[in-house]
Image 1: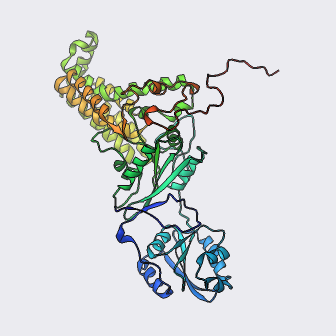
Image 2: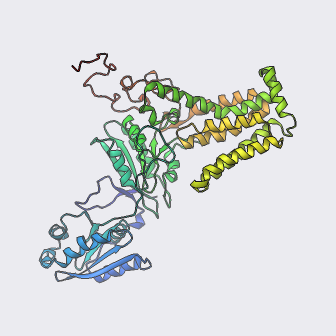
Image 3: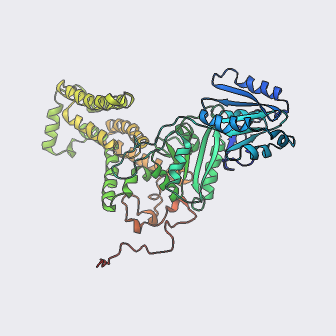
Amino acid sequence: MGKLKQFLLGEGGNISSTDKELYSPEETSEPLQKSLEENDKIIQKEFSLSIDFHYSTLIVGKRDAIVYFFDTLIAKDRLTEEIFEPLVTAEGSDSVLQSGDLEEFRKEYFASVPYKFAENYHQIFWKLLNGYAVIVIDGMEQALCINLGSIEKRSVTEPSTQTIIRGPKDSFTETINTNISLIRRRIRNPNLCFEQYRVGQDTKTAVVIGYIKNITNDELVQEVKSRMEKVNVVGLFDSGNIEEYLTDKTLTPFPLTYNTERPDNIAANLIEGKVAVLVDGSPFALSVPTVFTDFFISTEDYYQPFFMASFIRLIRYVSFMLSLLLPSLYVAISTYHHELIPTSLLISVQAQREGVPFPAVIEILLMELTFEVLREAGVRMPRAVGQTVSIVGALVIGQAAVEAGLVSSVLIIIVALTAIASFVSPIYNFSIATRILRFVYILMGALIGLYGVLLLVVIMVIHLTGLRSYGVPYLAPVAPLLLEDQKDVFVRMPVWDNITRPSYLKPKHTKKTSDKGSNSGPSQDKGNFS
């Protein structure tokens, strides 16, 4: 999208020096003219077809002036109080403006409000579209932009996709400033940095990358910035639009970025040494780099005793294998490997399949596809009836299919167990990868039995071993085996024993704790309160 340029911000104001925009050279605008009439023609020509664009003419001292604003982007009650009242009472302002220094005028009449100066038309257009009221005064080559931004926004609510029983109940919203505040409330560290970019030729959406500069590896931060600068899109409305630009160019069903709507998730990742990406208008934040085991870890694991968290985490790994392999194993064994089934169970299964007109592979593909349709219908339908449709639909269709002799009852059990296991993953997009691969495994099991299933497992492991996320092996810390990082992978060790950050992130500081105090575990002293 053209080269990266530093947006001219002027002095003062409340936006950090890391605020950047992506501009094309042809977008650079002409400088503001001294003639108010000429300036007015150009500004009104740009927004003449917008019904929410307004302007008001008035006299400041002895000079003509015009205030421009969008009434849909500003707080109207602040317009009168912070703009018109100071301007109307600015009787002695002409002597201040004679020097041509708009800064002196601002100090005199707008000392306590957030502001920016604009020196060309493009900057004026940009500020107007971001909730500023722009004051253009005759004879001045600068415009004063006062921040009056006020947009209706959704309040902070509970997460809708990553619910937990114990832990914080807040989630990100569509407002990027709210999301940043939710993170800063958790990490009160002056080294926590948020750098802003503008992405999208038409939308100019704010995209923020966050990291802790005394923890996160500098090369990782630079790589994220480099990929951000290469983003070339017309519009950006959600973090999903930018996700493919930030991931490694690899054809894989497995997600290479971590997305979440939980602020505590992102805060924990930042403390480990990762980089977060927030997009204005999106309630989902991204975190990079990502490894395979990240998708089996829930923030709730750290809000309950370690032995409980370890047990539940092991269940997630087992559920992943069930969701991926159970249907294909059923097809392979029932088609090619009857000898692996105990005789009594084999007789029961074959008795249930008697009269079923389809082979096992067609039978299970039909039911899996039916369940996927029901699952998608439940997601897309209104919330009040969506869950009912999913549950009732599955029960009615399953029972009717068995009674009609289209499928066996044991297959309904297999499909139900597989579906339930697929919901165990804390991250939704990871379960989608499992659902896609499940059909491939079913076909391989139908073609060459267990040999096909095992061959596909080997191919998948080789594929996972070759994946990288910002240079980090996707299977780290399992392959390559990093013994120092094994305390929080398959099980979670006690917090006092897990004091190092993941070594594969190459953080500047490997320890999560300071040198003060002791981390030898809980005290054995019973204490004496008498």
